[in-house]
Image (cartoon, rainbow, N blue to C red; front, side, top):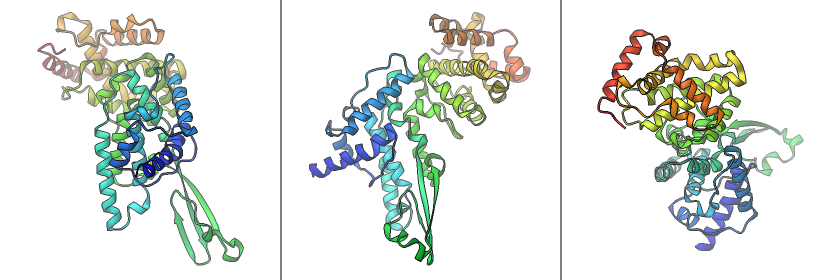
Length: 384
């Protein structure tokens, strides 16, 4: 049994994990279960060049994220990273048509989805920038994954092959059998998931890696407390750069909607340090847009961000005006303690939101007063 599991581990590392982390053609095998997971996370080494390639690729991504990146554990000892990779492998396997047709296949689909859902639930949430870096270095390439679908047309009909090459017999004697092969590239995250449970699993997978999640904001994105693990200037800049590369047209609305929901007065469970990070990140993004793209680019962010900025302004107003009561932990002046110039700019921008009249300008007088009263009620007991 151990020999078979060792072969599966080597195939998983060499044909799936290494191409995903380093780039290259991935091969997705049979879905992995509890037995394979126990073997993979037992510290077993695979004497394979793929392991060294994964180490080098993860270190390169970490250096791009932070000037002084943390030392990462080897893959065989990094249990959360291995669990993420197993979950990503299973999710890709679930999208294969062979697990969507027939009663037996659908039962297997349900069983594998349930195992993968439990696996993701058991991965500890990122608590520090180091955790966030380690998790992102194994998933950073996932949104770039593409699948090649092929359609074979021949004298007797048409056959479709999803994510795999047609067998040799199907393309033999092309002139005699009038064979034509058409290829189409599909972005896996955008076009490969069809069932609702697959989309939920993708959401849960990305939320386990907060940097990956925030870099690929999309409709339905939710701001979770795990995003506070990105509270390092280097990570903030890394995510901002990725969002600007994508363009704000498709990013601003879901990003601002998610942050606005998290900062809403009904979401009393949102920790105050997380509120502070949301505010800092948004203003940092706005300042970067001004530096990089000027007012036209800023307009793409300002309009959907206006309600969110108004809410942030009210939070910071309460912090900067002692007569409003106990502090919330979002004090703009504390951001100036960091000598990083961009962080200082964020502090000054947050401070400007606390000026008299800022909430009314952003939200209108009636809405600003309603939210101001809601914030006072929420923090009447001096929540800390």
